[in-house]
Length: 238
Image (cartoon, rainbow, N blue to C red; front, side):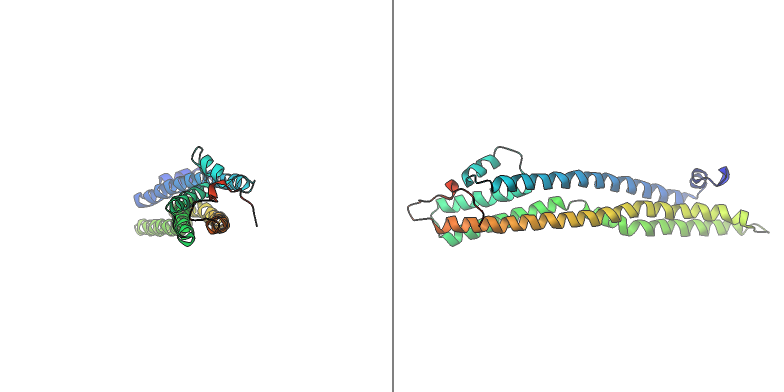
């Protein structure tokens, strides 16, 4: 490709509308890459925090120790779910409520916390989906507009050759290229992050069910006198 048909020359010689489309797509691509890198490190941190707390949870420490540690250090999503359930369970236990009320209240608190954590983990994912689905059409709009503009300009010429047509069409096609450049990474990242978030959600759901079973055993062992406090029982997997 000679200098006259270089990419930079095609961009600078494009019509105003096509230039605006290209600039918008480039800014969108930069924003999507920022979201992608943020999600990569964010989801990696979430997985590492959940795995670390899950190992600690099943290490045999008591619920009171785990609850106290949850109030003194940075929390992972799984740890926040545990803390919300444990806090509600102990609050209802102090009120000497029935075991079923204790368990139901703790489970509701953990469900609310789970949904809140998933909302945070899924943040900006819809932006990537929008970029992936819309960018090619925006690029196509720029291409159609550029081709239309090129043919309008050619209408003033008495003799039209390929040398007259090629630059205008090439300028327009750059918009579609930039649209695909913005869309393809967003599609790949969206699918990857959706799969990772689904695994995180499954892990949190499983933990919630297992912790509910542990609370059920503790709630069932409670007595009106307040003995058998759940905060002192070691955690064991059954």
